Every structure is written in C-alpha cells, then in structure tokens.
Image 1 (cartoon, rainbow, N blue to C red):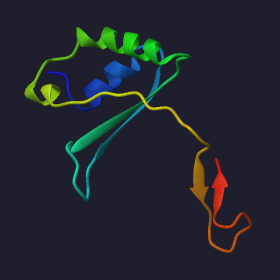
Image 2 (cartoon, rainbow, N blue to C red; image 1 turned 30 degrees about the vertical axis):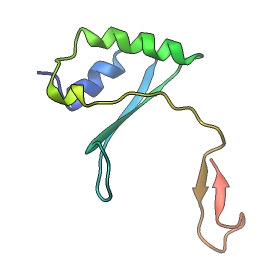
Image 3 (cartoon, helix red, strand yellow; image 1 turned 45 degrees about the horizontal axis):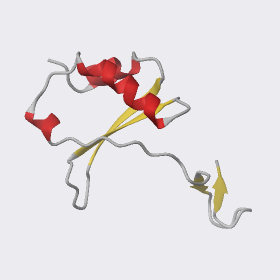
Image 4 (cartoon, helix red, strand yellow; image 1 turned 60 degrees about the vertical axis):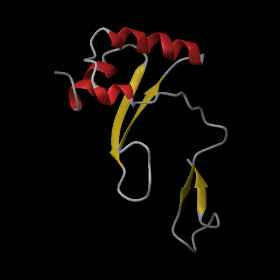
Length: 95
C-alpha cells in the first residue's frame, strides 16, 4: 500500500515536482486533519494537472481519497518573514 512518505517519494519522482511536506492540524477547525504541500516548477497551471495524472495509476484508491481536495495556488506578493523587534526593517523583511 502506498501512503505517507511513500507517496512523497512517488510524487517527487515525477519531473517538475521539487519538494513535499506534510502537516497535521494542531489547533483550530479544519475539514482536513492533514495537509500535504507540493512545490512544482511549471510555466502554466495546466502543466501541473498533467503531471498529477501521471501519479493516478500508482495511487491506491481509499475512502480518504474520496474526501481529499486538490488545488493550485500561486503567490500574489513577496514572501515576508519576521525579524527580531528593534532590528532595521520594522519587524519584517522580504525573503
């Protein structure tokens, strides 16, 4: 059965997928107790959907998959990180 780290390895074997990280909800309400983020290098969102089709044959269908959601996000601004208060930059900086 494919699951957990096996899925990440399977996904990262597909050209274009560059990184993977799994999270679980630690506090608050979420329709999903776990979330996986995958970083992909592609010029157009449609390319990403085509890449994921390559994975379908290797995935085992389970009830959890029926309740899963997939979507593509892209940045709309720069990444901003905190810096120690009192440092130059008023408490934030662009990465």
